[in-house]
Image 1 (cartoon, helix red, strand yellow):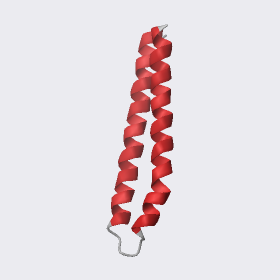
Image 2 (cartoon, rainbow, N blue to C red; image 1 turned 90 degrees about the vertical axis):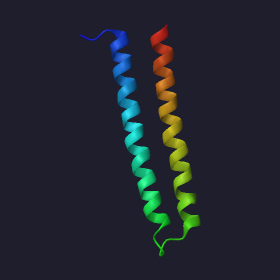
Image 3 (cartoon, helix red, strand yellow; image 1 turned 180 degrees about the vertical axis):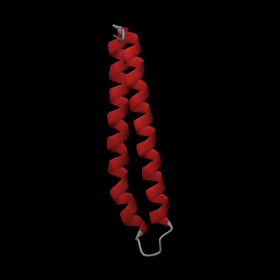
Image 4 (cartoon, rainbow, N blue to C red; image 1 turned 135 degrees about the vertical axis):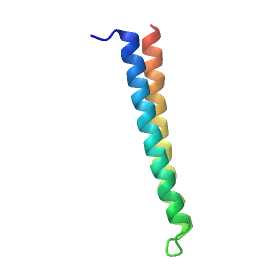
Length: 72
């Protein structure tokens, strides 16, 4: 069985890896959309900005909560 510190480190690493994959894929889609002449660029930013904020905020909250919880 894992102790509390190893479990916190494992969950933090998994959350960070997931965040990295999600953000890289979102940036890839953004770049494809920006260079596609059919797509209106202003609509791309309207659609992606809330998604970035939600995903990044959620994961930062998760990682911070794990860090605070592991220190107590």
